[in-house]
Length: 101
Image 1 (cartoon, rainbow, N blue to C red):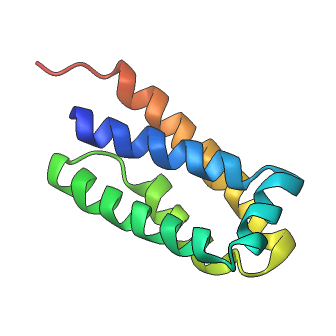
Image 2 (cartoon, one colour):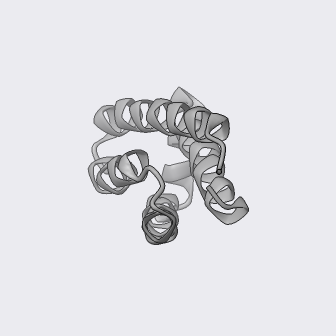
């Protein structure tokens, strides 16, 4: 993965992990009128485009796009943000171990 791909993979992970915090993430989303979900959608969409060009793993970001839409439902959103953060973490760690030849 290129530095840009890694930045988007780890950046979207950090954002999803923050939104997955039970009280803090939910309060942040509600206080900002659900705009953070739109930001998450855009971040994941851009990450998918970048990672497709690099042939990197996009499953975590694809789940993130779905999460951004489904997260309008309070408890479902919390669970989906946590699942998405875990998937992005696994992809980020496995992508860091791959070496280019």
